[in-house]
Image: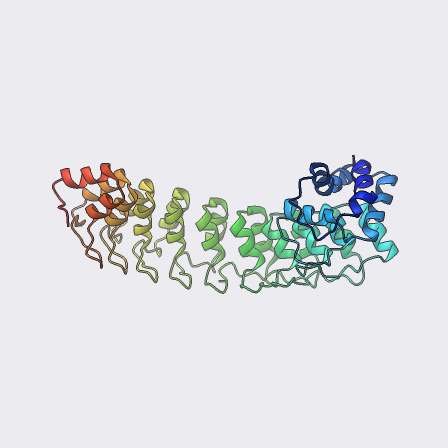
Length: 381
């Protein structure tokens, strides 16, 4: 199949198609060959397939590049610079990469249109064999960042490629905590993706601060809590340097993020830490508790109500209370629970003089309107 695909891509008819044409053109077989020839070649590379691949790379200003980048790598082809070495590294075809190196066809530190070097593509896609062969080259730059400051290690950590991470950490030149332009480190990328193995490897390496915030004040714990990655949260909470209640630049704490996402397991772990305050407001005045009714996360709300500090009627900076948010969202069960709390004022008006009942009526939530009206605790405004 690799030979068939490459023979087609090398044909005069295909080479005659301009590389600048959008890859949305409807030629299914061209798309298939462009996207999958490397997959077939990686599994079983014949001598003929290797020769055809090298022939394709002799003039790689080719329509297949657009299909590969947009369909497989999910990045737009902005300009030229994506060489045969970049492509072979992206697919992980060790034999082709080795031949290109022997022939000196492409520099291993050559940047493409995104500023990626071939090593970055290999690390991004988890191709350990290609990473090893590229690192054996004398001129290899294993810590070279792209145009946004992201290194091969960051790419590997972001995508959970534990083997590649271990290989790169074995290079003296590689900094395990080198941030990219937004301040995210390899650890924060790994935590954001929920990659427990990579998080563990990075922390065992040493020289990594597990509580280090990025430019927005988000820590690895915040990223993991926001997505509900319980394993990563558990690992990070075991680190002395990690503050489980540290707010971001916008004032959101890890508990705020997990409550907003309805991640019950993470909320339970964070509430188990005495220093975590469930009533701590962010810059908009929204507390971790307020996020649960706002999103309709009933179980999370119940957990938070178990802490004395949680105020079930505390409004945000716009004057909207948890009940107003629950009513606006049509969360009947949440509304019922809140109305059962003496602290909750069902007629509380926000800064625009709107009540929970009016929000429910405005959004057409008849069930909530009925609960608020029949409960005898609220009157229309």
